[in-house]
Amino acid sequence: MIVTISDFKNEAAIPGLIVEVLATDYIGQSIRDNVQDFIDKYEPKFLKMFFDSNEETAYTYADIVTYLALEESERNDDILDSYIESLKEPISYYIAFYYFRNDISSRSVSGGETTSNSANSKKSDANNRIVLLWNQMVSLITDIVNDEEWYIIPDVEIFKRINPLNI
Image (cartoon, rainbow, N blue to C red):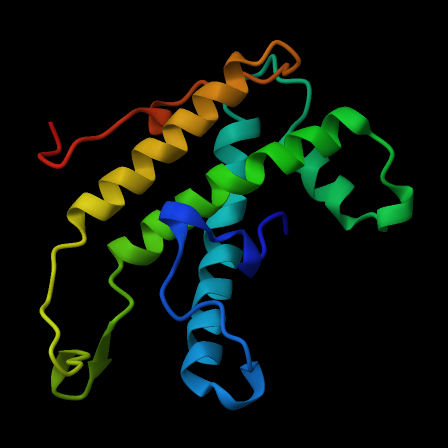
């Protein structure tokens, strides 16, 4: 995997994810486990869209998976290392988009859906945040693709900006 828990920063920050004493913070551990599940699910999807969307791409998703399976000492492709490092931030935004879109604060129970209700809190709409996350991810991808050193041009509709009205 490319993204780690510590890569969720700035707009992609997830409340309760980074804790100081993990051994005694069961809620923080639960949040970390949920985020790790999202990483495991959505990072491969992102990489497939990014690397396998254009047949003229120098690397494929399979190349990335094979390279990441190597020991650190065996990795000697500077271009691929640069790709991987550059993709950490957009992948974290992509994963955070799905995390907040799926509103992980609600849980299914036998009586239906429940939502956490903290003292002095008010439910807010996550739509503005997820639009911001998606558009920031698109901006980061655009910056990467426009970099002359890159030989990858993703050719999919998914890397397009969205707006809160879905127009």
